[in-house]
Structure formats: C-alpha cells, structure tokens
Amino acid sequence: MQKILLIGQVLSFDGTPFETGIDAARYERRGGVLIRDGKIAATGPAEAMRQDHPEADIVDHGDKLILAGFVDAHAHYPQTGIIASWGKRLIDWLNSYTFPEETRFFDPAYAAEISERYLDLTLAHGTTTVVSYCTIHPTSVEAFFTAAQARGQRVVAGKTCMDRDTAPDGLRDSAQSAYDDSKALLEKWHGVDRLSYAITPRFSPTSTPEQLNALGALWGEHPDCLMQTHLSEQVDEIAWVKSLYPQARDYLDTYEAHGLLRPGGLYGHAIHLEDREKDRLKEVDASLIHCPTSNTFIGSGLFDMGGLMAAGHRIGLATDTGGGSSFSMLRTMAAAYEIGQIRHNPIHPAQLLWLATAGSARALRMEDKIGNIAQGMEADLVVLDLESTPDIAQRAARANDIWEAVFPTIMMGDDRAIAATYIGGRQSQGPASVSTQ
Ligand code: GUN
Ligand code: ZN
Image 1 (tube, rainbow, N blue to C red):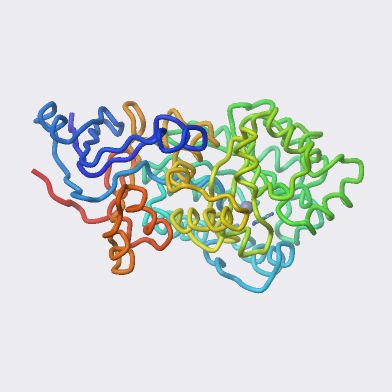
Image 2 (cartoon, rainbow, N blue to C red; image 1 turned 90 degrees about the vertical axis):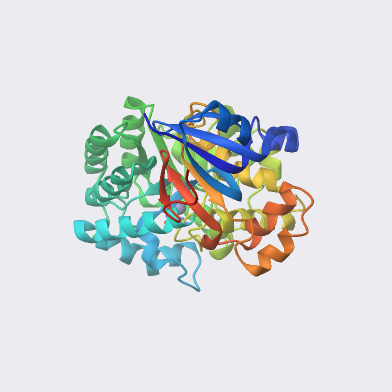
C-alpha cells in the first residue's frame, strides 16, 4: 500500500477561529502529512513523521504552506463562459447574460466541454470541492458529475429548476418534470463515489408554488441530500418575490411554506435578511453562503459576517462564479475581508482560511470528510507558495508570523500561488514531482 509523506509548513484547525481566535489553528513550521489510500493517515512534525514512516515516498514542499483544499460552497459552472459580463444588476444580468448562455446546455458536448474547463480552472486555483448549480437540462448534470467522477473529486451539484414564465422560453421545466428529472438524477448519482446531489430550485421568482412544493416533497423523501437556492440577494429581487408571493411573510417564507427550509439547506447570498428570517435560519441550523465577489460585482450589498457569526449561524464561503468575478477562493477571501472592513468588522487571516476550507465544509455538513488536515479526513489538499510573485514576496519577507506571511497571498495571490493541488491524495495540479526520495 503506497504511502506518501508531504512535508512543508502545515496549517489546520482544531476549532473555529470565530469562537476561539487563532488558538483554533494548529501550525507546524515544518510538518508532515502522511497520505494512505486517499486519506490522511497521520500528521505531526516532519522529522518525527519521517522516522515513523521510513517506507513512505516523500514529497518535500519546502517552505510552502500545506492547507486543506478550498471548498467553494456556491457556484454556477454553466456561467464559466460569461464571467465578468458588465454593467447590469441581478435581474438584467440574468436575462442579458446568464439565461442565453444556460440555454446552450441542452447539448451534451457543450456541457461536457464547459464542465471540463470549469474543473480545470478551479483546480488551478486550489479548489478541490465545489457545490454547483447546473442548468435545467439533465445533460448538464450528467456532464458535470461525469467530469468530476473521472477526477475523483468530491462535488455537489443539481439540476436547476425553473417553471415560471419569468424564465425564458427554452429554459423552463414544469413542476412534474423538475420532480421527475431531479429524482432520477439523484437516484443515479447521489452517494456514488464522491458525488452528492443537491435539490436545486434556482430561486422563488423562477418557480411556481407547485414546483417549490414538488421539490420540497422530494427533499422530504431524501433528507440526506443538500438543497441549494438563492435568498435575499438584491433589494429589487425581494420586492419581486413579494409581488409574486403576496401571502408570504418574507422571502424565506416562500421556501419554508413549501418544505424547502431544513438543515442541509444552502441559502446563497442572504444579504438583506429580516429578523424573522435570521431567527428561523438559525433555529433550523441552515447554512448561509457568503458570495463576496458576486455581491460587489452585481452590486447586491454587504453580507453581515460579524453579526451572523456572532449569532451562531452556519456560514460558508463561495465564488458564485459567474455572478462572482473570480474562480479563485484566494480572491474570494480577499473580497470577504474588504467587505468586513467596510462593515468595521476586520476578519483575521485565520478566519478567512477557515471559512474557505473547514467553514464551507461545515456549511455542507461534510466537516468529517473534507476541509481540514486531520487523521481520517480525505486527502484533498492545496499547497500555497507564499512568495509566488515579487509584490507578494517582498511583503511576506517582512512577516513576523504565519498570519502575516499568508495574508499577502490571500490579498494579492492568484493561481500562481497554487504550487500543488491534491485530490484524494493524488497530485492533480502543479509540478509532477517536487522532490522525492
Ligand atoms: N439568483 C438567481 N439565479 C442567480 C444566479 O445565477 N446568480 C446569482 N448571483 N444570483 C441568482
Ligand atoms: Zn448563485
């Protein structure tokens, strides 16, 4: 049985740095991560690990920083080709750019091409798990799961459901077909290898109450699946929801009334929440997904990380590609930091790194499998070069501790900072072999 011992700086978490600050972090200046059968078999100081495991192949990453791979808790892989489309706010942006592009995914060849492209791009940015919307077409789900399965990746995805006439021709299903297609895809893919299905009503404005009910029923029949949707992203959107669902108490109620509020619900954006919505989300222990580059790019607003974390919400971090303007979780952490600054709520680098790994994994209820470096976890890892470009290197050279050393890469880094990515213990990005013996 092949064992691999990775050596480098190693950072992991014992708890959440939003509760216990940097005491939640475990840092080895020169540490080792032993991988066997795709899982982390042991961790510890490098020299002790070498002595204890003389049979292991060694990959020495030198001064580079080994972290859990990034977990992107909300993305739209079909929007890869229209990322960075400018000048619109949410509803116009959907109608002008997103919906026309999504109509193309009836074609299995196109869906396969974009699935591969998206997974190549995100892996190059050190992202090992993504939670993605697909399009209304089952082919778009088949293509994505097929591509992820071939790479051995843990991903979550689902068929986007839209049956209202607010969605354009060519991009509508029905309440019944959404239920039937989602059920068939779920039964085929959920729990196969590292793949999970998420029931996916796009958002209340593009579904009828009948469709929301049907998907709520499906979730009730498969409560171990996740459910993903959008919530309170833009003020205009909330007014629209109120006009379409006049009896609803608030936006969240449009989901709640149809069986779409439970643990395992991933609510993207969640910016303009009313007190009742916050209370219910907390009571249910649902997950809020912060999409900072999207929230600034589309002009949606400023997520209240400080307030929601203090209230004990379960929060993940995400790119929201292509409303989000980047594939990179480094860039996403930087945007989360900047929004925190605007709200007078500085977010520590330990908190940013935790959000992009263990925090997102916890939002997906997968914290026992991914998002951290600990014995028994799946060996999805990223290796960061903390001196990847001259501008970053000159600042990192003055660092007094690991947080000052990594923060320039969080704020200024891109895919050049990703020295290697490991999926299930296999290196899938970066030089084939750094230094082995
Ligand atoms: N709300 C409904 N659909 C979408 C989408 O594709 N992107 C974003 N950012 N918000 C949405
Ligand atoms: Zn989204």
